[in-house]
Image (cartoon, rainbow, N blue to C red):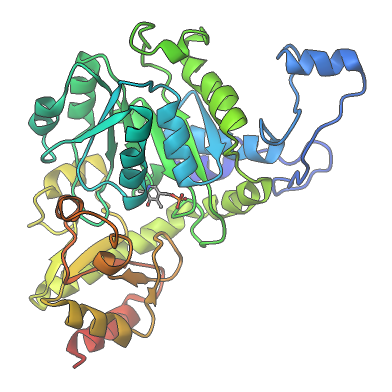
Length: 406
Ligand SMILES: *Cc1c(COP(=O)(O)O)cnc(C)c1O
């Protein structure tokens, strides 16, 4: 089965009870069992079934199975948001004294979260650049995981997942990859050697900007050394140990479960992922080429002059995502440009059906340090564009008039 057929048919079956062709929405908090004995068996994991939606729910389970199938994992756990997915995924294995080694220029919410971990005695170090040598130089005895994003936002840098996974495994630590920006349509990090994949499902997986959500997928191959990852010691379930602990100790205890309605809506959005991303990535490449031809300072991994172009071409199968950035010289001109656009909405998210723009320095990075801004490639004249599904001619005309605005 190829990707789009898998998208529609894997982990899909008409509802057994009614024949309904869309996944039913189980908008319920709890699940009944007819006898105390059967309830006891469900609790003990000896009878399949559901108990309480914070732990699991059929609508959420179906969504988890679908994303897991696309990513090629051994299982997935959905969360309340992308940030819940990041925090639950990482805290599932880290203890006081441990360190995260991350790529520079992480999503702002993630770098802010990692900064807060200092209060629990968990440190974070950032690699000085995108190369494996940069990561090797920043490894320490305390490093317990390497954390990257497939395409940095808004820096648009790309790390070689396969090469970095070799380094991580040689050091006895797993590689976690936030695949939000590329989605499994462009990149399946587990197939490149990564161990855990994280998504904000609020973005392109949903595609319509109607629900917040997140998900964690495990590849099931990493061997968790009991001395280095003591939290997993009590979960001796082989390839499932990470996920069992994630569901029981993180989502169930910390409480960041996905809402069934959000799983339902995001599942509908997921049906059209490939169709949307074909259009969006073609639009983004056209727009980037159009800006380059005008002599604008455009950054997009799909342009041949981008430093990571060859790696991105190989790793993402010839598509380069929806995000591009423009440097407009001054903050004033960046603001004028945004205000002059007719179609692009001035909002802070990404992965919508409509084209979106934002001035990162005065918004998402408002409270970032100068170092964090430099790491993320955020300058005062930078505008981030997230390309949508509109007709490319309309987008080009609109961006052209906004560039000419005085
Ligand atoms: C949006 C985003 C997140 C956070 O997801 P939410 O659903 O907004 O909590 C994490 N990582 C990346 C790369 C994102 O774009």
